[in-house]
Image 1 (cartoon, helix red, strand yellow):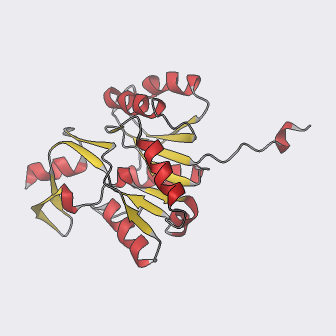
Image 2 (cartoon, rainbow, N blue to C red):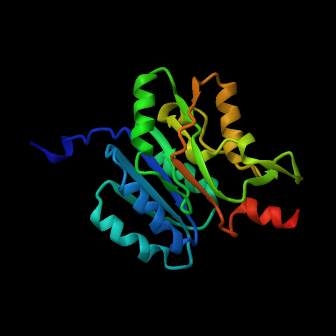
Image 3 (spheres, rainbow, N blue to C red):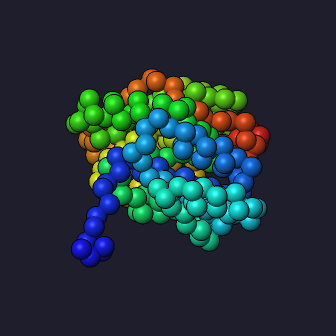
Length: 218
C-alpha cells in the first residue's frame, strides 16, 4: 500500500502554544501537557522569533513526542503566532496553552467529556485557577483595573475548528484579544457553554506579560 494514502486519525484536540522568550517557563507548560490523562491531542508550538534558548529547551520534547509539532518564525506578535497555529491544526477542537501557564492533569479529560456530553456546543470556556495578580487593565479604559472574574480567559477556550476558522481566528487589537474573539463568536450565534472546573492554571506572576506591563503604568 502507498504510505501517502494512509491518513492519520483526526485528533480530538489541537493545542496551540505560542511562545516568545520564555525558555525558563515553556518547559513547565509542556510538562503539564504531556502529563495529561487524556492522550487524544496534538500540539503545535509556534516560536515567535525568540532570542533566548527557547529552541534548545523545546527540542527534546519534539524528539520524544511525535504528536508535538514545532515552527520557528520571525517575531510578529502573539496574534499572528496563534493564528498560524490554528491554520496548522488538525484537531476537532482547538485550545490554547500560554507558555507561562499550565494544565492540571485532568484538564483535557474533563473538557472532552463535557464536549461529548454536549455535542451541539462549539465553544467551551471557563474553569481557571489564577496564581498572582487578580487584576488586568480594562480594555475600554486602560487607566482602570478590572478583576479577572469579570473576564474571559483565552487559555480556557475550546473551539470547534471550523467555527474558529469561520471567525478568522484572533484579531489584532491593542488589548483584549480573547474578549474580542468571544464577542465575535457570540455575535455569530456559535453555541457556547461555560464550565467552572478550575483546571487551567493561569500564572499572573510573569512581569513580561502585556497586561502586567500595562498595570505598572496605571
